[in-house]
Structures are given as structure tokens and as C-alpha cells.
Image (cartoon, rainbow, N blue to C red):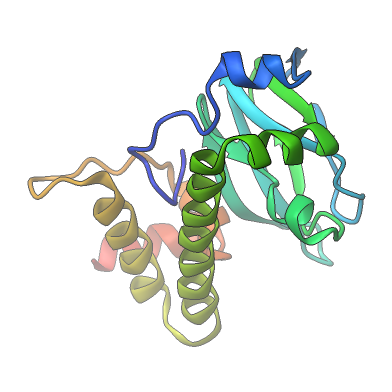
Length: 190
């Protein structure tokens, strides 16, 4: 589940990744790819499978930053900004993921300005999403938080007709920072 642009194509074509020393690696379910606070040394792009990025609260509860699927990339801002990962990335199912060293990633972007522009647009969309969620989590009641998330998803789906919500109550809980029980009660009110 990708929350920034559900209709995008693969960020970097596979042949280009491979031509810049990217390797396709197999990862098993529940394997962390990186942890919050580690230095960013690689670009990641999913060929098959799913990944979740999250933070843990002091009481051990997960706050999910996003879910990523085949064709998605993740964890790029720390590469651009030369800072540590702000979240942990965990493989949700057996996955094949392209891994590209940071130096090779920057060489690729210099040679392919069209791909660099795609990343600029993607990062802007992620910033808008995070700004919306921060506002929602800090000041609005549960029903409003859920509706904002659902409106965001529908807006990215590019459909005007009915929209099937591709999330479980648990995933809505993780994305809004609420308990599952609160999500269930709020959805019943809606």
C-alpha cells in the first residue's frame, strides 16, 4: 500500500538500476532492512513483495509512516540529506528488492535528470502527506483523522466513482496513531 501516488510507475527501470551496480536481493518476511538511527547507505526499490516503514513509541506501539509495494522505492530522503534514517523498514512478506549503493545512486541521477525530477516530485508528495497526518494526529478527533486518510487515498486513486479502501482496521490504526478499538468505534460512528 503506497500512500503518496498509487498510480506511479516503477521509479527507476530495472535495466538502469542493474547498469549502475544495483543488485537484486531476496529478503524473508519480518526482516528489517534498516533501523531508525542508522546511516543511509543504499537506495531500495521493491521488485516483488511489501515493506513497512514505522517508528516505535516509548510504550512499544508502532506508528506506520507508510506501506510500500512492488515498483515503489523508499528511504530516499536520508540519502539526499545525508542524515540517519528517521524510521525502521521491515519486510512484510518474502520480497525481492533492488539495492543500489549511495554513490551509484547519485551517479545514476546525474546521468538521468528525468529520474531525478521524478524523485523530487515523489518527495514533495510525501512531505504533503506527512504534513496532513501530523496536523490530524495532533488536533483532530478520530473520525476526522480517518476521513482525512481515506480522502487522501481516494484522491491518489484517480477515481471519481466509488472507492474500495485497501486497508485493514489495523493498518488504519497504525497510520493514524490510534488504537484499533478507537478506529473500530470511529468507523461505526461514520
